[in-house]
Length: 81
Image (cartoon, rainbow, N blue to C red):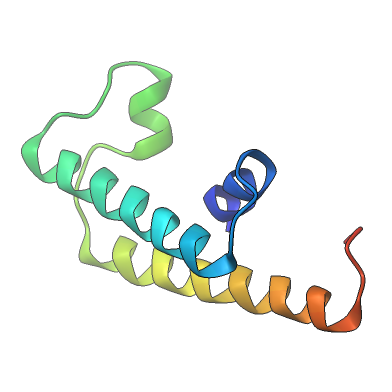
């Protein structure tokens, strides 16, 4: 959800494109973990050092939750939430 929200601040586009970009970022993080190319220091802490299939499940749940939250706000007309 955090990556989705951050992209929403930086990139005004459709929710579908933001969802795809978030999923691509999540997949890239896992791919780099598989290759062992995690950044040193705080970067490694942020993205993690070990690949885990459950991370992809967690990313998917987060993206779905963020998308549902955004659609709920748009439907209710509340853009400040």
